[in-house]
Image (cartoon, rainbow, N blue to C red; front, side):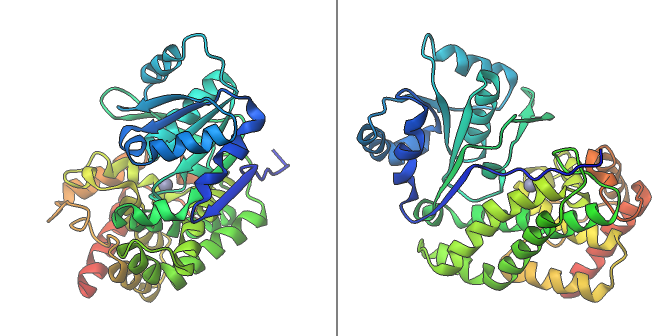
Length: 363
Ligand SMILES: [Zn+2]
């Protein structure tokens, strides 16, 4: 395909108290939206949500989502709507509720508004929906026909959440520059199915620079449950820039490695953003970058609590066979061609061993 695509949400709204905008944003889609939210999020902000919706003249149907994102659970959410014909789907909470909202929107042919209450990855901005089976194995990545209508990020809610989520979000986001650049340098394609535009590369680079500059201060602020300019900058990098960067710039080896890690001893329990944080180090090693460049990022990871070794991910003392298994499972990922050079299971295994050695030298 010779043309190139840039896709993005229609509106992105971020700031302390931004959730108050939800009624105004949802109102043009009719008086009966459907809200899908985590039960604990409804416990936390349910009353406020009612006030916001009532002020905009909306009477939403609220569904507390629990469980896994399977075609079966989404079908039962649809069934629970009965005769209601919502005009828009609103997802509020963590990754599962937002993905459930997206999956329902895709099924009903509706727009979706995402309201993340944690910043553990960039899925709120993205059109991708990770679908699972009942055993919690990812079976496909579906795509919304239209990017989210709006993404509403209330930084007061993000700052109130456990800091491990923001740390993971930084890990997920920091890889995007290297993934997009590798995709452009090679012959890779983006989730839109085309070669990247320069705009995506610029955004992914700005994402990286923002994180390097502000992540440490933002995490300190999040520890105190306080919003500050550094936290605002980092949340924008984690949710908006990272999402635009990967959707329009492409994913690569950093994310491919998660295919192995989700099956690996101990490491399978680690959060996605920690997987990707470790994955970007392996990608740099697989690209045969100089040790100093990898060590620079290892040092940054160690300062802010991101994984630099398999032990950090929960897999202490990995055997050669275990490393080989991760490399082999990684080879099943579709993003591997988005690298400037070809890799195979052996070269990925070598890159993992290089990172283990370099992390230990700084451990
Ligand atoms: Zn990710």
